Image (cartoon, rainbow, N blue to C red):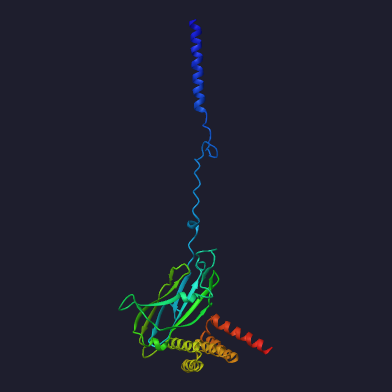
Amino acid sequence: MIALAALTASAAIALSIQGCSRRKSAAPAAEPNKPVATAGEPLPTAAPAERPAAARREKPLKPVLSLSANDTTDCQVASGWPVTFMVVLSHPARFGAGQGSPPVVLGSTEKPWLDSLQLVVRDSQGKPGRQVDWKMTRVRFEPAGRLELSGQTTGRAMWRLASQDSAKLAQGVYSVCALLKTEAGEVVESRPAIVRIAQEPAGLSAADKARKCQLLMRESMDRKDWAAASAQIDSFLADQPEDVGGWELKGDLLAQQGKPREAMTAYDTAVAAYAKMAKDSYDEPSQALMAKRRTLINQLLTKDK
Protein backbone atom coordinates (compact mmCIF):
# COMPACT_ATOMS: atom_id res chain seq x y z
CA MET A 1 0.00 0.00 0.00
CA ILE A 2 2.76 2.42 0.89
CA ALA A 3 4.61 1.62 -2.38
CA LEU A 4 1.47 2.27 -4.43
CA ALA A 5 0.91 5.63 -2.74
CA ALA A 6 4.51 6.67 -3.40
CA LEU A 7 4.19 5.68 -7.09
CA THR A 8 1.01 7.68 -7.44
CA ALA A 9 2.62 10.75 -5.83
CA SER A 10 5.67 10.50 -8.12
CA ALA A 11 3.47 10.32 -11.21
CA ALA A 12 1.54 13.38 -10.09
CA ILE A 13 4.73 15.37 -9.53
CA ALA A 14 6.07 14.38 -12.98
CA LEU A 15 2.85 15.44 -14.68
CA SER A 16 2.92 18.79 -12.80
CA ILE A 17 6.52 19.51 -13.88
CA GLN A 18 5.79 18.60 -17.51
CA GLY A 19 2.77 20.91 -17.52
CA CYS A 20 4.80 23.83 -16.17
CA SER A 21 7.49 23.26 -18.80
CA ARG A 22 4.91 23.30 -21.55
CA ARG A 23 3.35 26.52 -20.23
CA LYS A 24 6.77 28.26 -20.13
CA SER A 25 7.75 27.25 -23.68
CA ALA A 26 4.41 27.99 -25.33
CA ALA A 27 4.42 31.28 -27.29
CA PRO A 28 1.57 33.66 -26.63
CA ALA A 29 -1.05 33.81 -29.34
CA ALA A 30 -0.58 36.70 -31.73
CA GLU A 31 -3.28 39.30 -31.91
CA PRO A 32 -5.04 39.58 -35.25
CA ASN A 33 -3.29 41.99 -37.72
CA LYS A 34 -0.48 42.66 -35.24
CA PRO A 35 3.08 41.87 -36.50
CA VAL A 36 5.21 39.62 -34.33
CA ALA A 37 9.00 39.84 -34.26
CA THR A 38 10.96 36.63 -34.63
CA ALA A 39 14.17 35.89 -32.76
CA GLY A 40 17.04 38.21 -33.75
CA GLU A 41 14.78 40.82 -35.41
CA PRO A 42 14.01 44.27 -34.00
CA LEU A 43 10.50 44.96 -32.87
CA PRO A 44 8.45 46.49 -35.69
CA THR A 45 7.56 50.12 -35.27
CA ALA A 46 4.16 51.50 -36.01
CA ALA A 47 3.78 53.49 -39.25
CA PRO A 48 3.63 57.25 -38.60
CA ALA A 49 0.23 58.79 -38.78
CA GLU A 50 -0.45 60.49 -42.11
CA ARG A 51 -0.03 64.27 -41.90
CA PRO A 52 -2.96 66.46 -42.83
CA ALA A 53 -2.95 67.73 -46.42
CA ALA A 54 -2.25 71.28 -45.23
CA ALA A 55 0.89 70.11 -43.43
CA ARG A 56 2.11 68.16 -46.48
CA ARG A 57 1.74 71.12 -48.80
CA GLU A 58 5.13 72.66 -49.53
CA LYS A 59 5.72 76.37 -49.38
CA PRO A 60 5.64 78.03 -52.81
CA LEU A 61 9.03 78.77 -54.32
CA LYS A 62 10.21 82.36 -54.36
CA PRO A 63 11.90 83.95 -57.37
CA VAL A 64 15.51 85.08 -57.09
CA LEU A 65 16.13 88.78 -57.73
CA SER A 66 19.43 90.22 -58.92
CA LEU A 67 20.09 93.93 -59.37
CA SER A 68 22.86 95.80 -61.15
CA ALA A 69 23.62 99.50 -61.63
CA ASN A 70 25.43 100.33 -64.89
CA ASP A 71 26.21 96.61 -65.29
CA THR A 72 27.82 96.20 -61.86
CA THR A 73 26.84 95.80 -58.21
CA ASP A 74 29.21 98.57 -57.07
CA CYS A 75 28.79 101.52 -59.39
CA GLN A 76 30.81 104.73 -59.28
CA VAL A 77 29.55 107.59 -61.44
CA ALA A 78 30.10 111.31 -61.66
CA SER A 79 27.31 113.72 -60.90
CA GLY A 80 25.39 114.29 -64.13
CA TRP A 81 25.99 110.80 -65.53
CA PRO A 82 22.95 108.54 -66.05
CA VAL A 83 22.54 105.34 -64.03
CA THR A 84 20.75 102.33 -65.52
CA PHE A 85 19.31 99.73 -63.14
CA MET A 86 18.59 96.21 -64.37
CA VAL A 87 16.52 93.73 -62.34
CA VAL A 88 16.57 90.06 -63.39
CA LEU A 89 14.04 87.61 -61.93
CA SER A 90 15.01 83.92 -62.05
CA HIS A 91 13.68 80.56 -60.92
CA PRO A 92 15.64 79.05 -57.97
CA ALA A 93 16.50 76.08 -60.20
CA ARG A 94 18.93 78.30 -62.13
CA PHE A 95 21.06 78.40 -58.98
CA GLY A 96 20.77 74.72 -58.03
CA ALA A 97 17.73 74.98 -55.74
CA GLY A 98 14.24 73.69 -56.45
CA GLN A 99 15.35 71.28 -59.19
CA GLY A 100 12.33 69.65 -60.81
CA SER A 101 9.96 72.10 -59.15
CA PRO A 102 7.02 73.66 -60.97
CA PRO A 103 7.33 77.13 -62.54
CA VAL A 104 7.06 80.28 -60.44
CA VAL A 105 4.15 82.34 -61.77
CA LEU A 106 3.85 86.08 -61.15
CA GLY A 107 1.12 88.45 -62.20
CA SER A 108 -1.61 88.03 -64.80
CA THR A 109 -3.00 89.75 -67.86
CA GLU A 110 -5.16 91.95 -65.63
CA LYS A 111 -2.46 92.55 -63.00
CA PRO A 112 1.03 92.69 -64.61
CA TRP A 113 3.89 91.27 -62.56
CA LEU A 114 5.77 94.54 -62.93
CA ASP A 115 3.23 96.26 -60.67
CA SER A 116 4.59 94.20 -57.75
CA LEU A 117 8.21 95.21 -58.35
CA GLN A 118 9.86 98.39 -57.09
CA LEU A 119 13.27 99.91 -56.40
CA VAL A 120 14.07 101.32 -52.97
CA VAL A 121 16.98 103.73 -52.47
CA ARG A 122 18.57 104.25 -49.08
CA ASP A 123 21.19 106.71 -48.00
CA SER A 124 24.07 104.67 -46.59
CA GLN A 125 26.27 107.65 -45.79
CA GLY A 126 25.38 110.56 -43.56
CA LYS A 127 21.98 109.20 -42.55
CA PRO A 128 22.21 105.40 -42.75
CA GLY A 129 18.99 103.60 -43.64
CA ARG A 130 17.08 106.72 -44.65
CA GLN A 131 14.96 106.10 -47.72
CA VAL A 132 15.61 108.53 -50.56
CA ASP A 133 13.26 109.49 -53.36
CA TRP A 134 14.96 109.27 -56.73
CA LYS A 135 13.23 110.24 -59.94
CA MET A 136 13.72 107.08 -62.01
CA THR A 137 11.99 106.18 -65.26
CA ARG A 138 11.10 102.65 -66.30
CA VAL A 139 12.77 102.16 -69.67
CA ARG A 140 11.76 98.63 -70.68
CA PHE A 141 10.69 95.26 -69.34
CA GLU A 142 9.92 91.77 -70.58
CA PRO A 143 7.60 89.98 -70.71
CA ALA A 144 4.41 91.99 -70.29
CA GLY A 145 1.52 90.84 -68.11
CA ARG A 146 2.07 87.35 -66.73
CA LEU A 147 5.57 86.08 -65.94
CA GLU A 148 6.27 82.34 -65.73
CA LEU A 149 9.75 81.53 -64.46
CA SER A 150 11.44 78.20 -65.07
CA GLY A 151 15.03 77.00 -65.16
CA GLN A 152 15.34 78.46 -68.68
CA THR A 153 13.22 81.64 -68.54
CA THR A 154 13.74 84.95 -66.77
CA GLY A 155 12.02 88.28 -66.37
CA ARG A 156 13.78 91.62 -66.82
CA ALA A 157 13.00 95.21 -65.95
CA MET A 158 15.11 98.31 -66.51
CA TRP A 159 14.96 101.72 -64.84
CA ARG A 160 17.09 104.76 -65.51
CA LEU A 161 18.14 107.72 -63.41
CA ALA A 162 18.51 110.39 -66.09
CA SER A 163 21.63 112.53 -66.34
CA GLN A 164 19.80 115.75 -65.44
CA ASP A 165 18.33 114.07 -62.35
CA SER A 166 21.61 112.56 -61.15
CA ALA A 167 23.12 116.04 -61.35
CA LYS A 168 20.66 117.18 -58.66
CA LEU A 169 21.59 114.47 -56.15
CA ALA A 170 23.85 115.02 -53.19
CA GLN A 171 27.22 113.36 -53.59
CA GLY A 172 27.67 110.27 -51.45
CA VAL A 173 27.06 106.53 -51.25
CA TYR A 174 23.63 105.04 -51.79
CA SER A 175 22.22 101.53 -51.49
CA VAL A 176 19.54 100.40 -53.96
CA CYS A 177 17.41 97.25 -53.57
CA ALA A 178 14.71 95.63 -55.68
CA LEU A 179 11.59 94.50 -53.79
CA LEU A 180 8.98 92.09 -55.14
CA LYS A 181 5.67 91.14 -53.53
CA THR A 182 4.80 87.55 -54.51
CA GLU A 183 1.37 86.05 -55.15
CA ALA A 184 1.49 84.59 -51.61
CA GLY A 185 2.00 88.06 -50.15
CA GLU A 186 5.66 87.53 -49.24
CA VAL A 187 8.30 90.16 -50.01
CA VAL A 188 11.46 89.09 -51.83
CA GLU A 189 14.45 91.46 -51.74
CA SER A 190 17.54 91.53 -53.91
CA ARG A 191 21.05 92.09 -52.68
CA PRO A 192 21.80 95.81 -52.74
CA ALA A 193 23.60 97.56 -55.55
CA ILE A 194 25.88 100.33 -54.31
CA VAL A 195 25.90 103.64 -56.18
CA ARG A 196 28.71 106.11 -55.41
CA ILE A 197 28.12 109.59 -56.76
CA ALA A 198 31.07 111.99 -56.86
CA GLN A 199 32.06 115.13 -58.67
CA GLU A 200 33.41 114.60 -62.17
CA PRO A 201 37.19 115.09 -62.20
CA ALA A 202 38.68 117.81 -64.36
CA GLY A 203 40.64 115.34 -66.53
CA LEU A 204 38.92 112.07 -67.43
CA SER A 205 40.92 109.02 -68.40
CA ALA A 206 40.32 107.42 -71.80
CA ALA A 207 38.34 104.64 -70.11
CA ASP A 208 36.18 107.15 -68.21
CA LYS A 209 35.54 109.11 -71.40
CA ALA A 210 34.42 105.94 -73.14
CA ARG A 211 32.18 105.00 -70.23
CA LYS A 212 30.59 108.45 -70.07
CA CYS A 213 29.97 108.43 -73.81
CA GLN A 214 28.39 104.99 -73.63
CA LEU A 215 26.05 105.97 -70.79
CA LEU A 216 24.94 109.24 -72.38
CA MET A 217 24.54 107.62 -75.79
CA ARG A 218 22.43 104.75 -74.46
CA GLU A 219 20.24 107.28 -72.72
CA SER A 220 19.73 109.21 -75.97
CA MET A 221 19.05 105.99 -77.92
CA ASP A 222 16.35 104.88 -75.47
CA ARG A 223 14.68 108.25 -76.01
CA LYS A 224 15.14 107.73 -79.78
CA ASP A 225 17.02 111.00 -79.88
CA TRP A 226 19.19 109.88 -82.79
CA ALA A 227 20.71 113.31 -83.39
CA ALA A 228 22.00 113.61 -79.80
CA ALA A 229 23.30 110.02 -79.82
CA SER A 230 25.09 110.57 -83.14
CA ALA A 231 26.70 113.80 -81.92
CA GLN A 232 27.89 112.10 -78.73
CA ILE A 233 29.53 109.13 -80.47
CA ASP A 234 31.05 111.25 -83.26
CA SER A 235 32.57 113.59 -80.70
CA PHE A 236 34.04 110.65 -78.81
CA LEU A 237 35.48 108.99 -81.94
CA ALA A 238 37.05 112.27 -83.01
CA ASP A 239 38.99 112.16 -79.75
CA GLN A 240 39.50 108.34 -79.69
CA PRO A 241 39.51 107.20 -83.37
CA GLU A 242 40.90 103.72 -82.56
CA ASP A 243 38.46 102.86 -79.78
CA VAL A 244 36.88 99.47 -80.47
CA GLY A 245 33.91 100.02 -78.17
CA GLY A 246 33.22 103.41 -79.73
CA TRP A 247 32.93 101.95 -83.23
CA GLU A 248 30.75 99.14 -81.90
CA LEU A 249 28.44 101.72 -80.32
CA LYS A 250 28.28 103.62 -83.60
CA GLY A 251 27.29 100.37 -85.31
CA ASP A 252 24.56 99.79 -82.70
CA LEU A 253 23.21 103.28 -83.31
CA LEU A 254 23.13 102.87 -87.09
CA ALA A 255 21.55 99.41 -86.82
CA GLN A 256 18.75 100.77 -84.62
CA GLN A 257 18.16 103.52 -87.16
CA GLY A 258 17.63 100.90 -89.86
CA LYS A 259 20.93 101.48 -91.66
CA PRO A 260 22.47 97.99 -91.90
CA ARG A 261 25.18 98.79 -94.48
CA GLU A 262 26.48 101.78 -92.52
CA ALA A 263 26.30 99.70 -89.33
CA MET A 264 28.33 96.93 -90.99
CA THR A 265 30.99 99.47 -91.93
CA ALA A 266 31.18 100.62 -88.30
CA TYR A 267 31.44 97.04 -87.01
CA ASP A 268 34.15 96.24 -89.56
CA THR A 269 36.06 99.30 -88.36
CA ALA A 270 35.73 98.03 -84.80
CA VAL A 271 37.14 94.62 -85.82
CA ALA A 272 40.03 96.28 -87.65
CA ALA A 273 40.80 98.48 -84.65
CA TYR A 274 40.81 95.40 -82.41
CA ALA A 275 43.14 93.54 -84.78
CA LYS A 276 45.53 96.48 -84.73
CA MET A 277 45.44 96.67 -80.94
CA ALA A 278 45.90 92.90 -80.45
CA LYS A 279 48.31 92.23 -83.31
CA ASP A 280 50.79 90.42 -81.05
CA SER A 281 48.22 88.14 -79.46
CA TYR A 282 45.75 85.49 -80.54
CA ASP A 283 42.78 87.16 -78.88
CA GLU A 284 39.65 87.72 -80.92
CA PRO A 285 37.02 90.48 -80.76
CA SER A 286 34.15 90.03 -78.34
CA GLN A 287 31.54 87.42 -79.16
CA ALA A 288 28.85 90.11 -78.92
CA LEU A 289 30.50 92.21 -81.64
CA MET A 290 30.94 89.21 -83.95
CA ALA A 291 27.35 88.10 -83.35
CA LYS A 292 26.11 91.55 -84.38
CA ARG A 293 28.15 91.34 -87.59
CA ARG A 294 26.72 87.91 -88.41
CA THR A 295 23.18 89.16 -87.85
CA LEU A 296 23.74 92.08 -90.21
CA ILE A 297 25.37 89.87 -92.83
CA ASN A 298 22.30 87.60 -92.80
CA GLN A 299 20.01 90.61 -93.10
CA LEU A 300 21.93 91.99 -96.05
CA LEU A 301 22.09 88.63 -97.82
CA THR A 302 18.35 88.15 -97.38
CA LYS A 303 17.65 91.66 -98.60
CA ASP A 304 19.79 91.21 -101.72
CA LYS A 305 18.02 88.00 -102.81
